[in-house]
Length: 390
Image (cartoon, rainbow, N blue to C red; front, side, top):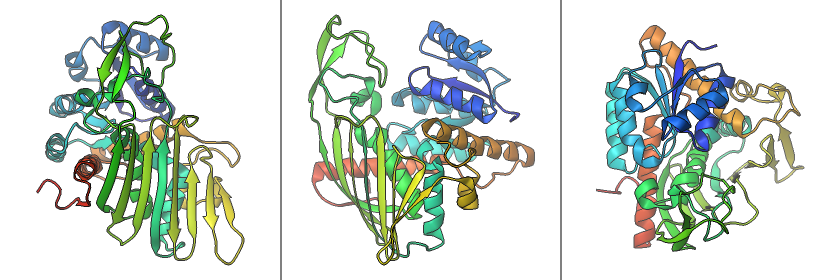
């Protein structure tokens, strides 16, 4: 059990995921804040949480809380993070860290000045098989990396009557599919390959430039609204439903990825394949406990997640025996275990420990990457991250 106590901002789809992950990680959740006191109380009652906050002022003034998880809509991240940092709270923020690189740069600056730890919730890093792949590449098992390909696809916005605040640039930012799910893939493959993306060439598509918005809205991934009984209004949309991006990495590797939130039949599917001079590796989030290993001169292999078969780094994030699947909720638990262990080491020694979790620096770089992708799509040319915005 960790000594820290957490508060969670947000009661939509991802807020309760954080709460459950915190409880499973051994962190006491002291309070929760929704968009209304009623929503705060409903979520607090559901999880047996002590406090339901009326507003952010009550939360930051709670002396029992030393860590805040921000799962609110993107447009609130900047202001809420600053409030928490100013109150001396450690912060774990949902991605994207902010609405633009000006905001994320300021958050990074303030976080480096504050005597607290900060992180961004790129939880997909924490699938044990992805950690295993990173270790294999680090020790040279697959040789030189030739290229990296893959995708992140969903279908929850497949119809023009599917609507969520994320489709609006004012609420979520000018990029949607790339910023919402594509950043998970981009963060993941850079972490696994141990190489940053150098430049991008992107093409974006808005399949539905007008969507039907139900009066009152709907929650993320929710199909609870009976649209035949709901009043719908036309809302112009200029964020992308699909994006394809060619990539160049600093180690010389090439890449190709696509994201979509309108691919029927795919509820939530992340895939990557990394081709090397000795072997290839591939992974699919629908089969999260399997690492495919491709060979030229011998039979291909499939490594099943089993702590006894994994590297030390991967096995430390695999808590169940082989054959007992670990999936999406477990990645949150494992990220939180790493973050809170670092917090307790920091508060004991007053020194910043090595971060084996995604930091604000990672979150800031992802926003720079998204802005380069958007610039590339508009200009239809390669954009280098080092020269973007110069």
